Length: 294
Image (tube, rainbow, N blue to C red; front, side):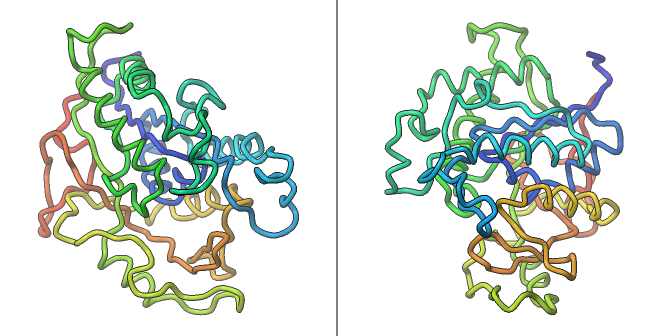
């Protein structure tokens, strides 16, 4: 592996998370020649599905949704130009935990029940192997509060530090990531996106105030313009057909809850470890690799 290669690692909880919150970022940097890898922690076995076509795949029926979603993730990553899909501990090692208080959260294989040391080691091993200058994961709330997102945030944060520790006993040479980011949705951009929504299917509805997660604008350190790769981002979203539907307009989507959401042309991040690079008039970076020695 060339030391001059820019490398980006994203740690996501389920198939489709990579496209929904970071799809434009993945496509942009992959098109620029960056080695982009997505490490997915579960197969999304507990997800709901849209329509009757895949209804028999869900956990309460044949429990085959996870395997099917591997195919969706593979198609999404190929579309985005990322490296082939990687799964934490291997595909199927950790199971989708579902939401708090559900029976799925009590499953011993659920990601929330993972042995912390084992899971941290598995992420740190990937970091030492790939040697990414930039790592992206969730914020402490996991975006909308999904337990698997929160677990991914906690484990990734610990693993980034462990991978850099020369006294940490594990394969590979220590690797210090230059920047660690949280993927977030800026409140202002979400509001503007919702205000611009036009026609959408009759079965969909607009979100209630505060229903969709967002962070205060002042917390955002980095804004990545993905307008040039929007078509690629939308195609990657379409790969996750069991989970979401694109509106006829091509500028909105909805999950199985039928809440319409805008597909944003700017993706936002909070830098939580590392030095801020060059900033614009708003005091924000426009490049995840700004200031990074490659």
